[in-house]
Length: 219
Image 1 (cartoon, rainbow, N blue to C red):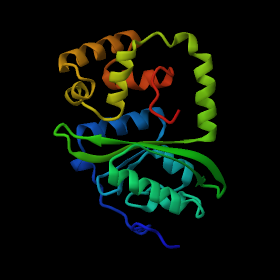
Image 2 (cartoon, rainbow, N blue to C red; image 1 turned 180 degrees about the vertical axis):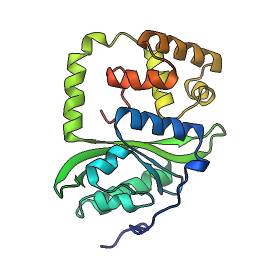
Image 3 (cartoon, rainbow, N blue to C red; image 1 turned 45 degrees about the vertical axis):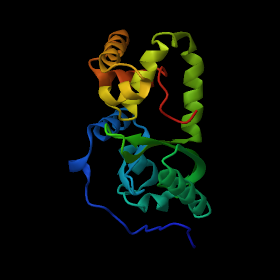
Image 4 (cartoon, rainbow, N blue to C red; image 1 turned 120 degrees about the vertical axis):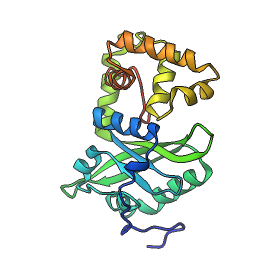
């Protein structure tokens, strides 16, 4: 198969976690705590993190670099990789449907969704993303109906702050993104922690996701 962009399924990178930013570390913690199919790619388009849930679903425990494409249906790989590569190059949001091979050899339809991430200096660091299978999307939709009456627990601004934290922003970079002061971000964060009965900011993000108060996955 010919690809328009480099495709190297044999590439396996050394563990990059020692050089991860605080945002990347936070995103990973959230993905592991909520059992999401999460992933992080660097500015070169190389995957540097796949959640343990991804490994359990696909049977590919180490899918860094471009090895993750081995879990994509052969007929969907070109379109999936091309869409991702273009989004990464243009530093734009990425979303595409494709089939994932499960560990048992069967396939399941899923949606991949990634958002560009910048550091405090405004430099592009890559993309944070979540993949959701059709089953997970159905469960999320069901949960949304069941918890609709609870959607007023957090204010819209508090949800925005937690969403940015979930995407790896710090209080400082979230303030820039929202056009408010860092102190105001911290106040909203504190209110959200209190309302959710959480122990800290990370716990608040995880709790908000579980209560369907916060969406960090494709709609």
